[in-house]
Length: 347
Ligand SMILES: *Cc1c(COP(=O)(O)O)cnc(C)c1O
Image (cartoon, rainbow, N blue to C red; front, side, top):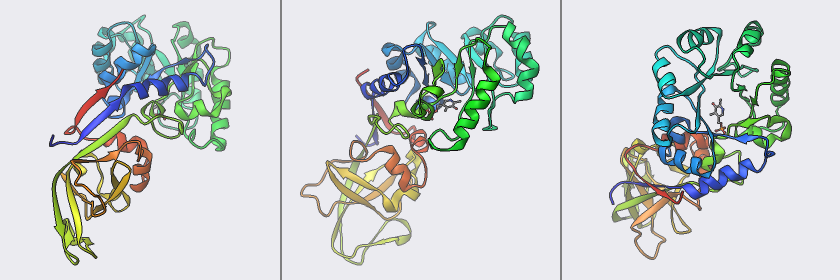
């Protein structure tokens, strides 16, 4: 084994989906967000495991991602596309039966002209100012759109990972004002919104990160494990250095393991100074700069030379590493590179 190995625990993934599903009443459908190749973990195996567990509705960012998912899951699940109906998407949306979340009057016109009678949803902007129709646009379109029977009306919360943020209630009230009385199924919450409580649940929830073991779902089971093979072990004397730029100098004779992974695999240089790899429960600090393909790790204190060291696992979550890099678990997961081998467990 000479490349890093990412192990995706599909049983943990399914149990995270079940846990999020159990936080809402049976009348609320828990969908799954599998955009960006299922947050880097592999849209096809992840999609299959979730469909087998009972997920009937999936969300992707763009139509191309919907095509990969349709390929894996066949015709019996609903696949919705957040970016809506873009120019050039018509064939894919039509042939693969994708459901665009319409974001503007322009998209609405394109959709009904190109694919009359084809299902669609509506995405409203309730304050995030990212995707979706503005209130005035929606009010102008509303009666016409409702006659065409949208499958869903959705919006997205900007601050749901901060339960006390006043933006949550403000967006909830805007969403209610824009959608009350429409009779169309509604969806407001991703992972963070599910945790905000029943007012935010509506008819469909759209968890992403919580399925993959990330915050703000603190009870999530870890889904991704990352083991890095040790290529070489050497002893360095006090005063010797490790890696580019001589940033680390040994202050005692030390044993340094060189592992096969680096920033090209999404292990960002910036996380180096605060991050350890693990030999079982023993933390082994990174020494020197993270290179493109290699990382130096201090194993002086270990009794035996390990064959591999663990970067992500029960000892260290994606959010802990993200913190070391000044970022969020989402970015760590979606950065994990294509070079590493992927293995799927359970499902
Ligand atoms: C990414 C995304 C989600 C999922 O969000 P998580 O925080 O990962 O649960 C849901 N809805 C929309 C519109 C999104 O862009």
